[in-house]
Length: 261
Image 1 (cartoon, rainbow, N blue to C red):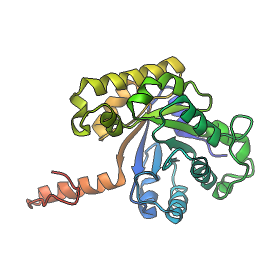
Image 2: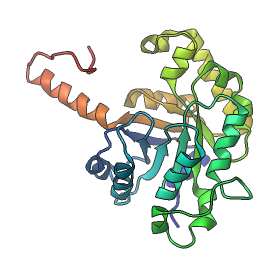
Image 3: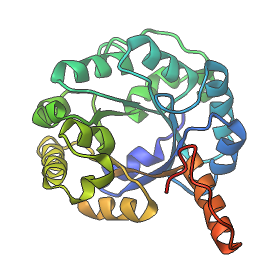
Image 4: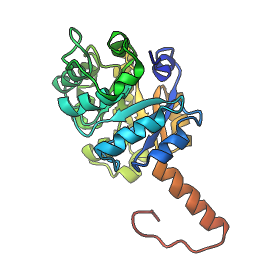
């Protein structure tokens, strides 16, 4: 059995912090797997992952203590099942707008009678022959609330049995509210929407999550009541370190290729 220590922390009312992998690089995953972070999240929606690099990354993460989680590309029964069969102990599903969307997520993630997950698994065999006896209990399932419609339906979405919590995507949420994501922090519409999701989590007893932009933002969100918090990404850390080095060397930054101003 593999205990989901991140989920245990969250259920105990403590924040679990994670790093996101987007580069599709198993060696990076291996380096981060035992750095002390609570969980590592493979981003197969926006990250550069293929089927082979997903398997290689999951194998690399097995060397450490961080709980392995994954964001699926979309709310799709087969894609969710594949990540579970490969050994993910957490599934995050983007763009969930309604209770029906959330029910589809729960059905795909849990074995009958709790859900409709297909019997059978691949790499998850490394967890032992008792895998089907504990996975529904240890698995963490979160839906992304990142639209005005989802905010309106937040309590109905989170009331679905089998959904453990949510993960707010602030960028897409801002866009759906007509807000520039780069200035969402100062916009009252964004803040009201976030508070409404937090209230829905409190009312349903579910775990509130947030995709923070930085370590400082992650700490602030944890203090606000969020328990499932990502605090940075592999590409972000790489660029941040490189830019700081350039600045300390007194070199002139050449802005371009999406590196920021």
